[in-house]
Image (cartoon, rainbow, N blue to C red; front, side, top):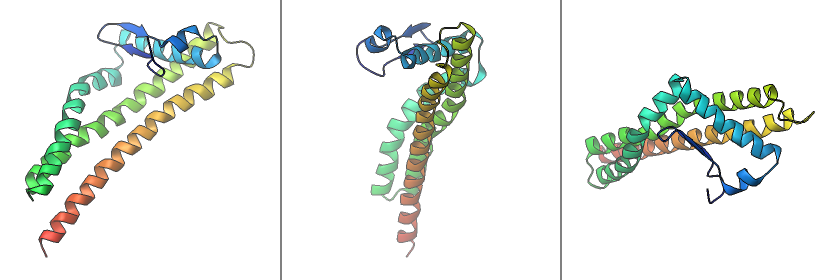
Length: 168
């Protein structure tokens, strides 16, 4: 698959898609990425509940983050608090999606490390390196959740500030 950082497991098509760079690399990092994506495939095969929940939230989060943003700012501009609150609630679905993603990603990383150790695909001493790569990848999702949550709080602050200003 063209591009970098495009590696993913597609639960709809039941396929693992790897970027050209991951597929061609013999590195511990690439092996960790592949094992992580296999972890997602195992989650799907075993009906891992957080993954099912996340998949159910995909359309809601996509719809909510796009429409919510528009409704929120339209509500602010028109001073229609109810519209802004609806927009904020819809936009918050992106933060909920990011939160539900955390256990899915951490579990896939744990499964990946176990798979790499159980299959002896790592040379002696490479397990700590693989764990570092997997932990770093999982932490990007923590950062994503923090960013989504901070944006929700920022929008909430804008809404409350506008309400306070209009009540003066």
